[in-house]
Length: 137
Image (cartoon, rainbow, N blue to C red):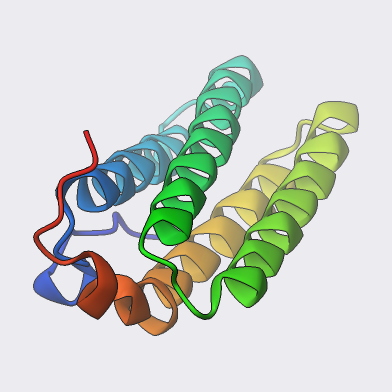
């Protein structure tokens, strides 16, 4: 595993969405640090996961509100992808809660990191023409 670096391809061009994505990457990098630490501490992983899940849900709500405001034509599919991601991450987190092993924590990291980067590059960037330079406070 390796830390995820913010790069130009991940920018949507809308400040609040880009900042949210940076925070999500920051939480994923904190999870990566938990998993690569000399000593594996399940409680540290659990705290990081809680922050990641909570922030993910908040971000999705903010992003979906912006999509509504700009009348994004693919909003229904985008919302569906968000719901599916939350369900998958929640299921992996429940497994981790029952069995807080390093392997189960790695599954969460791998899924979430892959999903997030792919979703930003393949889906969120399609929002750019609708939201670029628009401030939603």
